[in-house]
Image 1 (cartoon, rainbow, N blue to C red):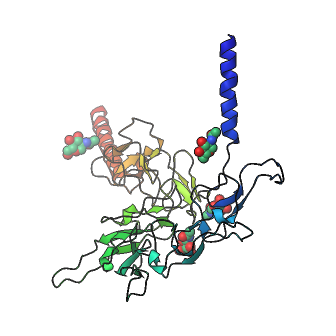
Image 2: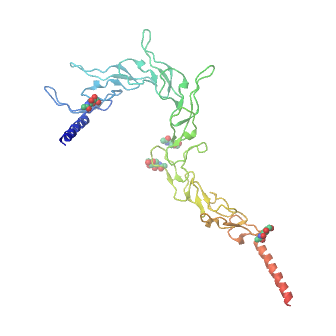
Image 3: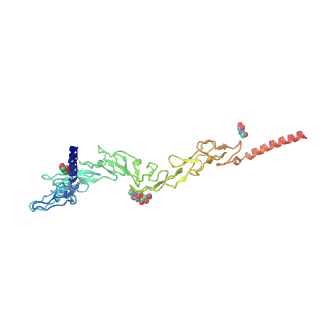
Length: 369
Ligand SMILES: *[C@@H]1O[C@H](CO)[C@@H](O)[C@H](O)[C@H]1NC(C)=O
Ligand SMILES: *[C@@H]1O[C@H](CO)[C@@H](O)[C@H](O)[C@H]1NC(C)=O
Ligand SMILES: *[C@@H]1O[C@H](CO)[C@@H](O)[C@H](O)[C@H]1NC(C)=O
Ligand SMILES: *[C@@H]1O[C@H](CO)[C@@H](O)[C@H](O)[C@H]1NC(C)=O
């Protein structure tokens, strides 16, 4: 029991010790932990400061120090002078760094002083016309010469050796690729990947392969999928409104209520009596689709009988069929007729019956008298 208790104390001690073992954040220098004073040395409180612009360090200072802890250049800078640790009254300084010329850069933040040839790669979305030149007898050092890729095309990582415009062999986010880059060969000029912009308020992931417009996704999660037949952002079926125009915003497309439909962001419409909303929420379907009924259409949003039929499919309930009956032989009706008396010619048939009855009556009279 006692041993366990001691063990717990022991573990706690190390946990605490670890928690206290602080470093400054990456690219900061200073005094990560308070230092207590001793003979002739003033105490220091913990204080980290950011490195001067374009300089840094990889892990952040872990022991008390000064600006010379900023001994790296930021990526895509070159180092003209190493950090200096002041001693014997000398002044400390961070590394001295200059930006790489247009589009050139480096893979790692430079840690040693050098010259402009530390800019020996091209940054993302540039192609390399000429490699960096290191200083040597007769050579002036030079950075890699880089040219920006044509609209939408690019690369990541950027090239580290010279080439041509076919180094622009990807499409950047927000573009889709219609044609691959072509590498120069006998008589064939190099070409970059051909990249088309996604529709307004949509985006796509970078790609190295052929894609089509459907790889673009609207910012608004309730927008309809983009396709060749729907090349802009509109609200999906069953949502009304206008899609939001930026990422991570409240949706501008609001869902319709139950048994309502909407297309292209229009206001929601309740499905006609006798019809149910389609699974895609873009229209309805009459419950009774048996012979004599007209299919549902957005133009009318009613369930009714075809011509030469009569009845009330708008009153049909799930599973019901035969809501529309044909007009009696020889008679006709207009679309949407509801009653047998709407069948034109039906009256004539009745008239025929009257005549039959009358003839019978006349015969009866003849017999009686
Ligand atoms: C404190 O951090 C440094 C650097 O991260 C590490 O080397 C050292 O082991 C740590 N010490 C303790 C006691 O955790
Ligand atoms: C959304 O589209 C509109 C219209 O094209 C445009 O003005 C706006 O900049 C777009 N928003 C974003 C974030 O792309
Ligand atoms: C887009 O989102 C913003 C912020 O969430 C909101 O204020 C704005 O009304 C939204 N736009 C539309 C069209 O709903
Ligand atoms: C309608 O005509 C068809 C054939 O001409 C006949 O078989 C049917 O019985 C008739 N129905 C009525 C209600 O008269």
